[in-house]
Length: 363
Length: 258
Image (cartoon, rainbow over all chains, first blue to last red):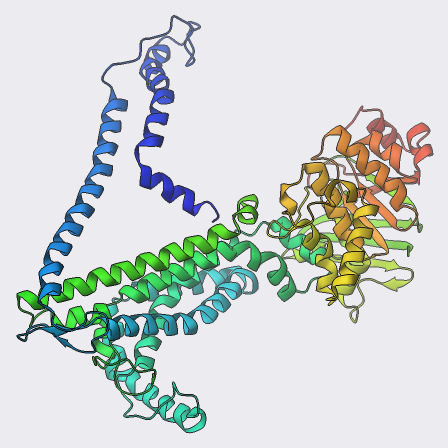
């Protein structure tokens, strides 16, 4: 898992590996071209390696065509990304100009009014809060399941359970959203009342009304990100070298101590990557949160009461009614979401890189 | 610090496959015993059944009796982790924990046993690394990853990790087979020193090595593939390599077989 950053580094620069591969493969394609000849005359000593003179490299072969094709594919991606960025910025800037409130701090969303007032603060706050809460709930559970599947469960049961969990990832998010809004809301309201009664002294467990709350949204999100984190970390745990596990066992470690000494540290970069993928999904999740959050525009730490919102959910809820400025405002919020995701990813890379010395020797 | 091992009718299985049958062997304290024999003859299986590492594999089990100073290793009430702490093991391929520094590797076993105090860990790490003849090479970079050392150094690091918990017996499963001759020599020298404190049992494919390092040698063999491995001859190393009593042993050590 330690090499993940390198691979994406290649993807970024694109051209480098392609040119390198070309020179070496030119000979290979010539040899392939020669193969039928030696097959037809098996008696002569021209083996696949070529006993005769060296054949000339072809000027225009499949090799060159393929190289052009891959280059074109790489360039296309860059062009599309650039086009999207230009479009988004061009749409967002006029709306931001028309905004007569502070875009960062204003708590409300009235871009269709004249003068338009809208602010991203509460939405960004809600996005981060729901995503972090969801991870806080999902990660321990996911790691527990992954460890059970990789190191405790009998092999057949582990495979079957892993399959069921992967199925969970295939459920469309709108189904999770509807389930959360129409069914799960009841139990969560009961839980909220209980939490407020017994832990009300903690500010986040404030008073009701209970219903479409941040807690509900986070719980639904947690269920949605659980399969990704579970199946990725399970793969990582299964990759732990047997030699390291045996080393721990031979030192007198119990099963749990072996997991702590050999498996978890080895899987650390992979766990971080899995959590970050989960976070990515949680930050960008749209329809499930649009259905389960209260769609308010206030910054509140009370996770139990009706309320909460997220950037993506707000876009889904407000796009239909938006006018020109309204759409521009939503696009501007999308750019902020993009920036948040970028910062989160860079942070994750930084965490993985910090112990590079150790993770690289592990790979 | 060193204990005597008695194996009586030890038979080990991998699922339905019988890997070794009725091994009877006594290992005296503070000696080096070499287990030799062709591939697949069960030397490693026997070694791994001494510290109950054999049963870690799914479906693997051991029958018969194995005692260390008279205590039954396989007794129902025995804590298996305590057995493995008492009988340390060094593997064929160096396997330092890749995420740990040199220091953390050496004290990993102590930390597993709940030792937390820095001064004790420091002292134990230095002692173990000195015993493993590695201290001078790594004392300035104890915080660096253990996996960054050379193969021979890694294997000595693994030996240091094993002896840091002060076991009674050290099992070595072909510890030099992945190493170059100089590192091999370093580890053989080390075995002579460790013999003062530990009982050592080593599996080796290298007969010169067995002749050089061991006091006693056990020769294992199989009739044919699929048959269980048996102990053919067990005697002083001198005797085995100069005047073996079994024809099979002689064939093997003179290179006529296996």
